[in-house]
Image (cartoon, rainbow, N blue to C red):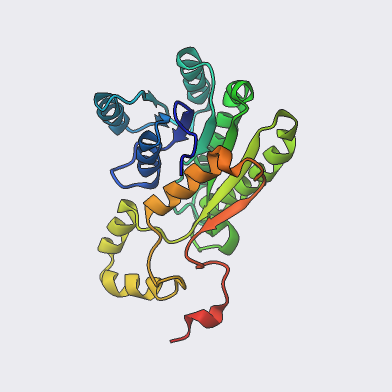
Length: 263
């Protein structure tokens, strides 16, 4: 299926993670569709990703940005505007499950909000003129933690809950401009970071198996490529009448009947 993303300018935050991370995978899938990926992230890997894409003949841009700093976000938006003048889709992807729980200092909680939620607001705010010009859309990457809780991560849970609230608010606020706003809900995804976490556990393989047994569809983790595919479909014109939605890509982990988990 041609998603009609060729030459579309798509901004992805937090997309300079290691190879195979969700943001980096989204960027690779965008490039394969002929889109123009714009990576906004603080990690210097972004320079390498930009170079790799350009060597393949793909127009791409990396804007090094600390997404916890709204001043840097505003500067990044100006750089994007100067080069492209428009944004066809904004994918707010940055997210760090940082463990800022009730015992954490207030400063840690506030930082978590700035990185995991305020960055979404600032990106939408400063990119809005370019989104209006292209009649683009916004896609926010959320987490099941906002819906289920996890324990020990109040900052992340509050942030991702706020992201869902912003998603619906923007769907209402921007409907007059024809700008759609949706969110992807992620649960257990086999990312490099998840794999690294499993390896830190003494009983890591047992823990992994206990998790996958609870994922109803095929008893396996969601792969970043599956999330990327859903993201591309959602920002494309194939989803032209979808707005204000929380789209869960999790193999039924969060919502399906618990009776499916019996062995």
